[in-house]
Amino acid sequence: MNYSKAIKKLREIDKEIVLITHIAGVLDWDQESVPPAGVDERAVQLGWLEKKIHLLSTSNEMGELLSSLGADEHNPEGSTELTQNDRALVRILFTNWNRERKLDASFVQEFAETTSRAHGIWAEARKSDDFSKFSGTLQHIIDLIREKSSRYGFKDDPYDPLLDTFEPGTTTAEVVTLFSKMREDLLEVLDKMKGSERVDDSFLYQKYPQDKLESITHEILGMIGFDFNRGGIGKATHPYTTSLGADDIRITNRYTEPSLAAPLFTALHEGGHALYEQGSSHALTAGSSLSGGASFAFHESQSRLWENIIGRGKAFWSYFYPRLSATFSSQLSEISLQQFLRAINTVEPTFIRTEADEVTYGLHIILRFELERALLSGSLEVKDLPEAWNDRMVTLLGIRPSSNRKGVLQDVHWSMGEFGYFPTYAMGNLYGAQIYQTMAHDIDIESLVANGQLTTINEWLHEHVYKYGSIYEPKKLLEKISGRPLDTNCFAEYLKNKYLRGGLL
Image 1 (cartoon, rainbow, N blue to C red):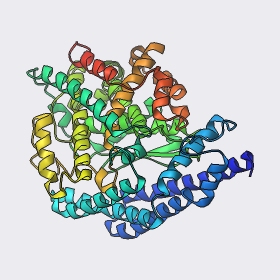
Image 2 (cartoon, rainbow, N blue to C red):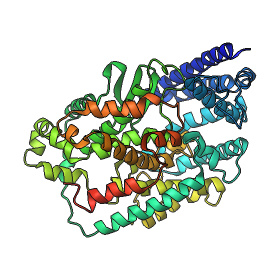
Image 3 (cartoon, rainbow, N blue to C red):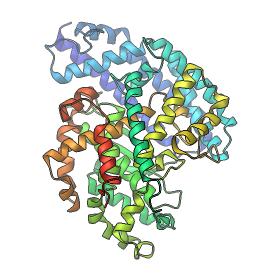
């Protein structure tokens, strides 16, 4: 088979895999809103789809096509005669084929069915604040995770192959080094802020009508560039973004708690993910594995950039606060812009990761990273996890959760079997700060934001980040954007300028 025929067939198989992935996404979306009684059948449906994807991705035909295109472990991109996009597609499919063929279809189906059922079990345990209801299921998931890591194979650390599925080309040792420096930076800022005057943010936790919150979050999403003709927004216990098709990018928000800030910044966060998904799905990539982000951390860089660096900045609210205060006049009429900015940028250790401020957020992630490695190695048993969680909260943040809902049961990720995912959240902060610093050299971000001209920012991000989808691996894409490897310096300087050097106001 010549290159032309082989790459054409490879593209056809890839499109079928992506199509099934989008169908599975519809079932995942439904899982958040349909009656619990349907969970068992949906688990079987998702398991069958995951099995189908696995069989297509790891078939002998896939291996033969990749081999005919020159791909192997030493050269996963294949022949240099292929176009850049086709070499990227070969790299993605070869990497996945080489890894996933080590898992048999029955294991993949069992893993999918187990984690699908686990979602409901975790939700019930969280609701009743009873870890024992989830511990047996979590143990089963960890056993499967260990088997998965063993089957994938690793040289230095059993966490490596799990991390690599979310952050290609990054090792556990690299994360340990980054997190060690990040931990020092975060604790330095946190320590220097101790004793600061307590900010009165009580006005953020009054009763805010849900219909108005939904309306204002839709307005913010439209302002940052979310295309409602190519997506929509729903509600969920745990907000997330998903692609149900090349032109069907959906996000969810949560309005269950008395809070103004949470829905606003969740919309900005998930909106950042959605902008990346919409921007990476275009004429050259739509319906293929080239659409979507370069990695989970790169994806997180966009959500954190929009949520925090832009969304919690003075320029953004100088423009948008009059609109917000007019919408909620009874709650905000006596609250100045300066008071609002200080309130939404309060730095204080809290229990819930998704509600953590920019300074303490990374410490939440370091905690989870350390616990995952301990669970995987067996040095920590599941029955001891709640206490280990609480002890690390005291060590890192100086607070101890009063319930498992505020502690070990707050995140959905372990019920999904997503060990190796959490580090990408903190790495996203690092990527985002480095990308933002680069962008600031090219355009006057603060002036544009203060005048509500976010289109120019969106265009810059599209040109330098979004349009490449997953054509480049994350390390290569970051160097293409910023000219240097990932480090902690930009993020540390951003935090110090904002919180220690008067840059907040």
